Length: 276
Image (cartoon, rainbow, N blue to C red; front, top):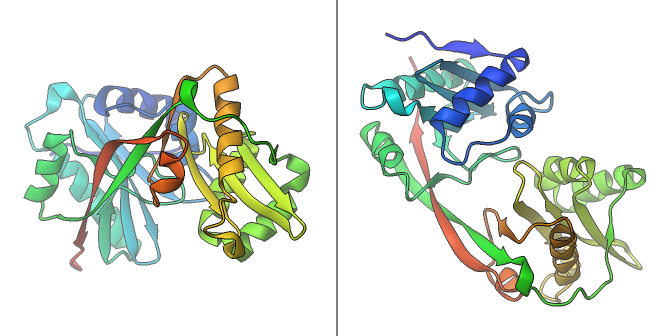
């Protein structure tokens, strides 16, 4: 049986090469470094050159497989199942009672397994994973977006404490992603007489992906999110991009209103982890 070495931050180049060979649309080196080797969240990364790679994380009793890939030259030999089993063992050791593939905030790389990845879907079914939900992205043609309405500004490092406190009150689940967007100079906010009203983050975990986006609770349903959304889209277009995908979409209407359309669908799989 192949022995899957555990990688640490000094191995990011090797991890990047493994991902380049094994994964569809592999994350960039810096994206892997931030998602897999951040001080903000412990992630276990294992693999073997010429075979494949798997990364897992545990939050309480919830385990997640953040990525899983097998080298094209080593497929159909049971390596995918072996990598998945290795991740499950790591998660059990951390106290996980379940494991989910995809959609693991805050530093996820994929919203699930894309529906075009038939081999991966079959692997998970063979390993008795159950399909639990579907997530989707929406693509935006930046050459066709509405005019910028104004009423928004790029967030700055000087506002970090205020933004962090606001996020803890209103959207604590998205605080790590929003602060990472701030560090990437990829966060747009708006204000009213009560302070921060809305935010739009982009290029958080993956370049070319937009989200999360949210408004203060008392502003729901009032269109308060559109200025920051359009402000971010115009900033992205000014950087030279022609398209962007809204990742892991919740409500469809706000994005459809600026010309977005559903582009890709991802399945999320889950199973219980029996104690050993």
